[in-house]
Each structure stands twice: as structure tokens, then as C-alpha cells.
Length: 486
Figure (spheres, rainbow, N blue to C red):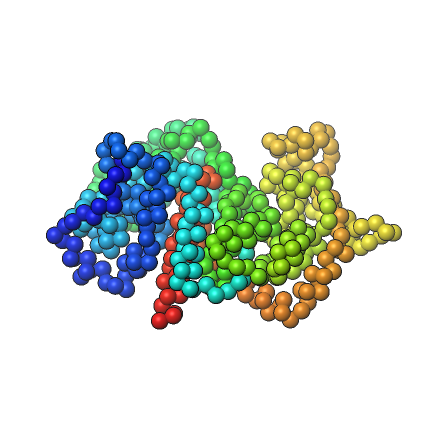
């Protein structure tokens, strides 16, 4: 239960924090900036209020997850650091002598308490609300883009992935003591995932028995990662890899296996909206939803900046109807009029190719972009027939025995004359230069907050990870803006 969870735990040692956690410490500043009781209000329905033993305060559990995102550490390592880092204990609302949680409770908190909370939107709304309250947002512009996050399992088979992680542990151990080779079990030669999991547990047990080696940071971090992965597989042995992840394409020749986060950011570089999808989804389809979510935060929007992926006909009409400037260059491949099976095929602007609902990209295109004898020009895209023949989604898409699979679009260039005139103006060109800002923000999410690779399997897991990462970068940006105003 969570009754009386807000009560402060008095301690004779609290004065230590005034000495070891200075006023300019980032975690102290976050505590002063944000009233985290909004978390308690959101999660009250997830706890019993008058029965059972006291639970770890939800605010503290939430803050653990925030620390995990800020410092890009595993569950085990973030809890371990909270034992001795006084800035962590201060941030978590603990007395210096208080014991820390069991790392496994973080997994339970994510799965049992944060399901169906709508955490991503809630945290973005909270940070934008803080910025508006402090009068930090002056602009009426948002910049839109998407960033990809690779699946934790990266299209490897479960056995291959487990082998890779156990190998990294052995390698770290050998750098310290090569004689450990004699203590490790023989490698698993079976293709069964269960036996590979058992082998990994044996590796973990052997290393943990050698405490002088297991405590060395270079070994401990890799060991903790292996333990998290093995526990994940132990719980989900019924699937072979991340079932929600899909193949996305960055260019015609490069792809990734994972997810996309569609992001809107204002001129002050605060993220105002985000939508997490599987990797194959096209960017343009989420523009209107990003705008509406940004509006719900209280932002007024007059200008929207994005790359050519957002210049679809519907988006141009939407912007005009809502009296907004859409700073997005036309791309003839995505600004067509009506086309068949729009929900079945998505256009990838980086590769200039269409992608089917299974995530397979067309291998070539043919046709003409010129208008012939009064007919609208057409472009035909050809897919790899070998993939279509074995595709699990082939029903209703591929006709058995067909020698080819194509998809054709009609290009209606006359639909966009007004926008074409607009994109050639100096005002359009000047505003388009601001797009680089969101690319830097995406890079920050990936390289400083671990958003390059999913920390767990499934769409819910990446939504959770995205929520915490975006909350962290927004809070840091607000603190930077406040410093600039002083």
C-alpha cells in the first residue's frame, strides 16, 4: 500500500547532504525544479491505499528509472551506485543510512505500475508545462523528424545473441585472469535456446564465485548486462526475438531492425510531442498527430519545419486549413494524389522506395515521370518475388504463382503548384535551415541517454525507455534555459 508515502523520513544525518550535494548539482536542481507528486497522483490507482505492507514510494521508483536514463546504466548498476552516491540518495528522497531497493523491483514497477499510464505524453506535457510556467517558450515553431532505435536483439537468433553476451563476459574475465578458462563450462553445441540459457547461467555462477574478479567494473558491467538478458529470455522463452520490432530503412542500401520515435521540438529545443512506432512506419503519416499533441501542451503553432517526408498532400492541406506554414520540400514520389492500398505500402523518403507492410523494400522502380497523352505519369515499384513467396503476410498481397510483385503510383504534380512556389521563396529557405536543431537533439537522445539501442523487448519497453529519455533531456534543457536567462 502507499498510504503516508509522502511523509519525510527524519534522520540525524540529513545535514550531510548540504555538504556533499552542492546547489549547482544537477540532481539537486531537478528536485527543486520538478514537483514529482504528479507521479503519485497518476499511480494511486495502481496501489492499494489501505491494506498490505508499505510499498517502496512510487516517486522513488520513478526517480530510479530517471537516473537510469540520465546515466545510461543497467538496473543493477544504478541501484549499486545509489548505495554510495550521496547525490543519488538525496535525489531519491532517502536518508544517508537508508537501504536501497532490490534491482528486480524496477522491472516489476515498469511492468505492473506503469502499464496503461500513458507515460510518454504525461512526461512531455509536464516538462512543457514547467517551461511555459517559467515563460521560457517564446516561439510558435516546431521542427519534426524521426529517430530510429535498434532492437536489443538486432535480428540475431536468440542463441546468437546469448552467445555474443556470454562471450563479452568471458573476454573481460580473460583480460584479468586467463586461468579462468579452466573453470568455465564447455560451450553449448546444441541449437536449443534453453540449453544456451543454461550455459549462460553457468558462466554467471562461475564469475560470481570469483568475487575479486566479479567486482571489477569492466567485468561487473558486462556481467550485469548478461544477467538482464538471460532473465529476459528465461521469462519469454516462447518467442525467438523481439516480435514487435520491424525492419526500417535509412537509405536504399542501409536498414535497421527496431523502432522509430517520431519527434516534434520547438525552437527552444524542448521536445513537445513524441510517438513511438515500429521501424517500418513512414514519417509523414505522423505529422498531424505530432502537431495536435504539441498543441495540447499549450503551445501555439504557426510554423512546422520538416524534411521532404512530411510534404504529403494531406499534410499540405492540413497546414493550410490550420493556417500554418509547412516548411517541407516537395518530393514527387510522396506528393501523389490518390493511390490504391495506401495502408499497405509506405514511402521511404531516404531510399526513394516504397516499403510493404512486412517491412520489405522495393528493389527497383520503372516508369516515367512525364505526362503522356493526357494521362497522369506513373511510377512502378518492383519487389523481391522470393521474399513475397515466403512472406507470412502474403495473403491478399501476393498472388500464388505470380512471377512478379509490383506497386504503382500516379504522380499528380499539378496538385502542389502553390507549395512549389512557396518553397522557392527566401523565407522558406531561411526557415528550412533550422532543421539541424532536431538532428542534434536526436543525437543527444541516442549517445547520452542510451536511446540508440532498446533496453528491452517489445513496443511497451521502448515507449517506457523513450519517455524517460525525453523527460531527462527536456529537464536538462529547461535548466540550461534558466541559466541563460540569469
